[in-house]
Amino acid sequence: MTVIDHPAAALGRRRYRLGARMFTTAVRWLRWWLIAALALAVLGGPVIHAVWGANAGAWTATISVLQWFAAITGGMYLHTSLPGLISRGVTRREITAAFLVFGALASAGLAALALTGFAAEHLMLGLVGQPADTWGEVLEKSARYLLIAPAYFFAGALVTAAAARIGKEGAFVVVLFLLFPALLIAGTLSLEMFGYTVDAFTWRAAAWTGSGIAFVAALVAALVLVLRSVPVPKRGG
Image: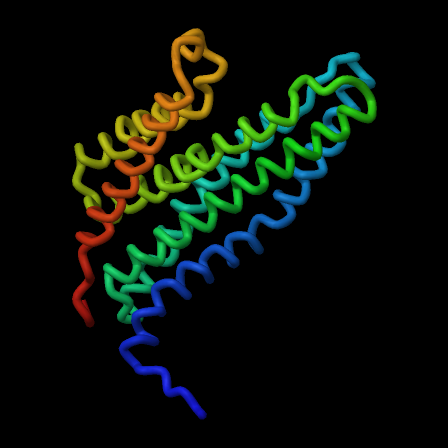
């Protein structure tokens, strides 16, 4: 029996297909960078051990840099695709849902990449020396990127969405492109680098997790509010 897909149902799923397509397109854009990063995770530990005699790898720094790729990709994709999506009749509600799907997939992908890199580095260090971390610590470090990755992605998307919402309004542009990104950068770096600060010794895992969830939730809520109020240009105007 042939099942006829109702037009309304198909239209409702369009936002999710759009978000998934954004993710696969971004992966194609960055595929060589991602492959190079994983190669660095595999080879970095043995090279550092051979040259300096240290049982350390380069993956922590590498995955940190890749978070900036997530922020830039989220912002640039929104900047380049938003006018075209609006002109094609995609509603602001659909655009918002699509970018939430995109962000969720990108964050999950980066967290999986973090785990893969830390695991590969741990295995390689085990071949040439003594790994600095246990497998439990590898999993703990990787799990943190379930919050770190979306913080970077949605921060980048929020800056771009706010720029589209405010437009060229003099002082607002100064605040938007200087103060606002600086605050977001401070928040994301605090979330990612808390383990290397003195304050980290007084933090419990639950406190960090709760703070991270609250920060990401605030970014997502702000992005939703801004995207749903982005001005739609008049046709023929």
